[in-house]
Image (cartoon, rainbow, N blue to C red; front, side, top):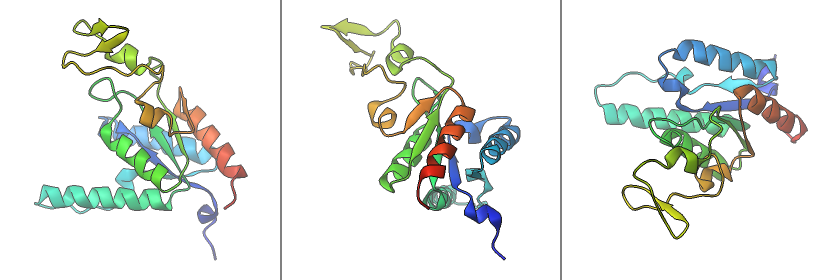
Length: 178
C-alpha cells in the first residue's frame, strides 16, 4: 500500500530557524503550517546525523543530508530574515542556490519589511555620487529589494509571513505537473 503522504508535494524548509533557542516549537509550528496547506515538510534537523569527533566530517554529512532533502523536495520555503547582520543566513542562501540550480521553485518570507539598503546603511556609510558605500568602501546595492539581487530575483516571491509563502507554494505546486 502506498503512503498517501508520498503523493503530496514535499517542501524543504530552509532558514536560520535551526539556530533558534525555541527550535522545537518553531519547527512544530512551521511543519503544521505546511501540513495545513497539503505540503509534506522536510525539516533539516529531521536528518539522522550521528555526532562525530571530527566536526568537519560531521558538517559535511549535514550538508550532504540537506542537499539530499532538497533533491527530494518539490519546492523550497526559505526564511530570509536578517541573520547576524543585515543579510540573510548564508547557509540558507546556499540552499536557495542549490534548489534553483536543480530547477526547484523557491518561495521566501521575511517579516522584516526593510530593503537591503535600509538595513545596511549606518553612521559610517558614505554617499558619493549617488552611490552609498559602507565603512569598508564597498558599494551597498540599491535595487529596492529585501535581499541581495541574486537571492531576491531567484525566488518566486518574498512574502511577509511563512503562512503566505506556504499558501503560495501550495497553490503553485497544485498547478504543476507531478
